[in-house]
Each structure stands twice: as structure tokens, then as C-alpha cells.
Length: 266
Image (cartoon, rainbow, N blue to C red; front, side, top):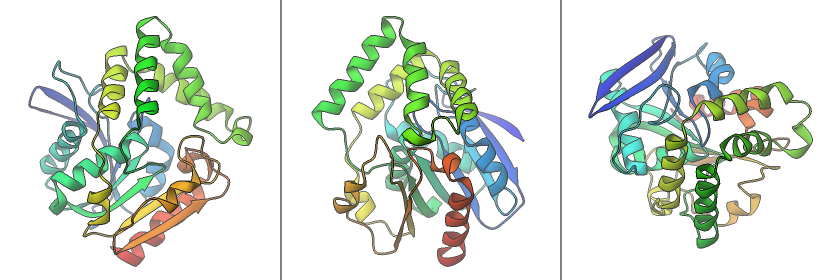
């Protein structure tokens, strides 16, 4: 069921699926994505759990107001949905940029979480090189290159040897990315550029933590596993044949990982 709430000058759109299960999974999409990016994955998860997929402000059918956005404000939008639905705590799963939002949520709303998962994401802030790259992308968007950026991104999030196999999904990703306004894309780029390092939030996390990484990811290298300080209660899962979209590239394995984690930790 598609729902919408209005709070603090923001209209937040989200999808609410599945049964009245004790375990509620909240899915937070990444950069150049919307809740639709999760559609096939959330449909399967909803067979066993209640699943809520949120359109972050400026994405999908959620609007964007003029105030500068931060990861905490994105997290506030997610919290508004959870509070409206009277959910006591949720297993929050963040993909890529959604992982940054999920960590901001963990920092600001720790009592609303039963568990946290970073799916192809990182707790670290941008370095100078990455910040400059985001600024360069913003300039390209202002110069009319939005569609080209969306097309290239939709392909690059898949492992190089998966591009042909998932051509339909890549086309869908292109269309989703193109549907996001220039203002929404620029806001998310600035928000990512200016986000805080939250490795300490992760290290001190008091709920179970699941880290999922793709061995062929073009954005999150495997070496990050040597740098992340994990919390006391964690599990790491490697998707050997995935890039940055494991919930599509290895959907069945990703579903099993989530199901096994819930059974073991929640």
C-alpha cells in the first residue's frame, strides 16, 4: 500500500507491505534511487515481515523544501514515518547513501531500532577527493548533463560482468534516476559531501548489526573491511558475484542473509 504523511513542511511518500509481523524492516534507498528500487526485493521480504520502503525527501513522491538538508534531516523523515505508523522499533536497512541515513538514524533515534544493516555502504565521511567529485557532478547537472549522469550511474552500480545479464534492471534504474529532480539530486550530493563520520556511532552500536558488501562493487572496496571497527554484536556477509546492487544481482542470497540474520539476532 502506498501511503503519504505530511509533517514539518515535508510530504513523505512510502510503501507499506506485508503482514503484521513483530519484525518491521525499514528500507532506505540510495543515491539516484527511490523506494521503487527496492520493489522486487521488498515484495519477497513482505512474505515474512512488515516492510516499509521510504522515499527520501526530494526522491520519488516525497517533496523537498528549501532548507539545506543533512543526513539527520533525512533520518527525521524516516523517523516521522515510523512514529506515524506507531512502530516501537525497526530493523533499519540502508543501501549506499541510505546507509548514511541509517547511521544518522541510529545516532538520533537509537531506541527506535531493533537492528541495523548497511548494504553496500560505509560509516566514513567523504575525503577531499570524493567531496570534489560530488561538486563536479553538481556542476555537470547544472550544465544539463543530468540524463548522462543517470545513465552512467545506473550501469556502474552493477558488477561489470553483470551488466548484460541485468540490462532490464539497469533500464529501470535509469528511469528511476531520471525521475528525480535536479534539485533533489543536488541536495543529496551536498548532503553526502558534508556528512559526518559516524564510525564511532557504528562501533558503539547497542543493537545487532549486519554488514553486506559486494566483492565486485565499483564504489565500496573490499578493503573497507579492514578499516571498519565493528560493534560487539555483528555479522559480515560477502556477495561474491555482486557489485553495488546485491539485492538485485544476488537477490535470493540477499534474502537468505536477511532472513537468517533476523532469526539469529532479532
